[in-house]
Structure formats: structure tokens, C-alpha cells
Amino acid sequence: MQTSNGVNDELNNRQTSDADYQKLLDKENSKIPQAGDIVTGTVLSASKAEVRLDIDGMATGVVRGRELYFEAEEYANLKPGDAVEATVIEEENENGELELSFRNAGQKKAWDTLIDAVTSRKIIKVRVNDANKGGLIVSYAQIQGFLPVSQLAPENYPRVNGGDKGKILDKLKSFVGSDFEVKVMALDEKEEKLIVSEKDAWQEKQKDIISKYKVGSVVEGIITALTDFGAFISFGENLEGLIHISELAWQRIDDPSDLFKVGDTVKAEIISIEGSKIFLSAKKLLTDPWHGVEQKYQIGQTVSGVILKVNPFGLFVELDKDIHGLAHISQLELKAGQKINEIYKIGDKKELTVVSIEAKDHRLGLAAAAAPDVKAEETIKEEKETKPKAKKGKEKKAVTEKKKKE
Image (cartoon, rainbow, N blue to C red; front, side, top):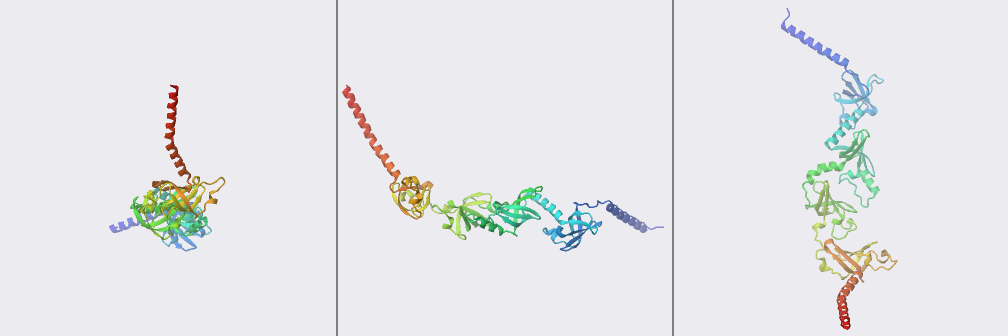
């Protein structure tokens, strides 16, 4: 007579046999991996020369040579027991094993990640491999991309005084080997096109910090670069702003380096915020020297000034350290055939006449000492004074002629 324990043991053995049988059936019916398939395997052994994988207990695969892929962390530090994906490139090699590739599987994963980054506007990290005059050649995993100069973050933008292309390229090449955080601007897997922006990623990270500042806020920072068009200053939490040349001082400036040098500390007022771009003014914190200029200079006054610049249309003249005037070519009494740069030279001190003052617009007009406009104004004044007399004379003559007729 069979005991209850014996019955249970028999049932358990039968269930185990059924499970094993089902596994054999599943294994038998499993699809044999084909070239191009992505399979998941367990690492049996891993070295710099090759990685061997067990594919579901029904096949062994090997990854070797150029198909080894170390750029992604999941492929760089494999050890026995790790599960990893690979692409079948040959169904049977010389040893009867599956020939596998991490590169193909890695590339597919990379494109999937990039597509997700576009959709979700995520920040990703790329490696700088090379540079040209237009920007940086970068890579995400093994996918090549481009980062245009215009899309560099402020701290990496190559600000070179004079726009020397050779110096700009040298600056760009200094980034080779660096990792940059970027956002994807354009992506086309079919065309293998990838364009990224470091500036967009920087703006994303800085937007909360920038929001703390408003137009009218006064900041203090260090000049990081000087260009033909102004000065860049670094302030706050890794923020950067531009003081345009017209906002550096009240007087006319030809070269910002005449006033400042890199490393100088300056105070400035925020006059505009456009996304990640912050525009500043240093002169707004200074007293406007044009206030009350009419008490200092008057129309018709003869003044002495130093020529700062000679242009085809006239002369820029320094009357004092704050007030500069313009002598238009039409006010310089040049003779026929005379050229302005032959008569006037930078640094010359000349006697000139003030012919107009527009303090609100910071303009003061000058003329050669024998001022044509002033003479013209005097002539008009004289004519106005004599016209009434002429009118009275004509009226008296008309009355006399009338009396004669009567």
C-alpha cells in the first residue's frame, strides 16, 4: 500500500519531469539566431581580445577584434555573469560559434537614446574629436556629430580680438578630447546627421539662476574677453554678460582695450535679458557728462580740439575727455580737389567753431574756424532786419505815385 508521502513524491517528480520536458520543447522550438538579430547573452569570459557569451544555453557566441566596443560603460567593464546584448553578424564561424558584435548593438542603442533626447529635450554628453573653422567634430558613442561655433556655451566661445581665424581655430582645437554637455538640435538617422548645441544645454542649466536677475539689476564681475564690439564679463554663478562698446563709456570709443584689460573688475547695470544672453551697461552707472553741456559750450564759440579720427565724411574731435564733436566735411571749407586726409591728421590740434549742440542725443557739431553755417545764419538775420525797411520804402513810393495821378 502506497503512503501519502510516496504519492506526493511521485507527483513532484512527474511535475519536475514535465517542466524539464517543456524546457526542452521550448529550446527545440526556439528561433535559431540569424544574421542581424540582436540577442541577449551571459558573459562566460571577457578580455581585451574577445568576449564569449552563452546564448540561452543553446549556443555560444564570440565578440572579437573591431567588433569589441569599449566606448559605452556597459561594454567596457564586462565580467562573467553579466547579461549583455550583441548583434549576430555570422551564424557560424570557423569554430561553429555565433560571430557577434557589440558595435552594431551599441549603435542601435545610441540612436534610440538620441531620438529620446530629441523628444524629451534631455542633456547628453559628447566627446570632442576634432575641430575646424566652423566648429567641433563630436561623437556620441560611435555616432559622429557637429557642434557649430555659434552653439558653444559662453565660457567656451572663442572670443578673439580682431576675429583672427587662426587663433579661433587654435582655441577650438584646445577642446579636442574634452566631454561637453549638449542638447540635440537636429537628428536624422537615415542621413546619419547629428547637430548639437552646448549653448542650449548651458541655458537649460542656467535658467533658474538667470531668473534671479532683472533689467536694472547692478552686477559686479571680471572682464573675461575684449573684442572689437565690446567687453564680456563673468559674474554671479557662472553667468556672463556683454557690455557693448557703445555702453562702456559716454564718450566715443574706438577700441575697448583703450579703457579696460582682461581681468579688470567692473560694475554694470543689466539693460536686457534675452534667453541666455545678458546685455549690460557700464556708462549708466556714470554721470552723463552731456548734462549741462550748454553751459560749457555755446553755438558760435571758437574752441580748440584734438582730432581723434579722420573719416571720408568728417572729423571726430576731442574737446575734452568727456565731450567729443563731429566736424562734417561740408563744414571744413575744403577747396576743389582737396582731400580731407591730406589737410587733417589724427593728433592735430585745431581751432574750430561750435555750430550745433544736441545734448539729449550727445551730439555737438563743429566747423572750420571760418564757420559757413554761422555766416549763413548772420546773413539771414541781416536780411530779416532789412526786409521791413524795404517794404516801407515801396509803400511810400506807391502813395506818391497815387497823389501825382490825382
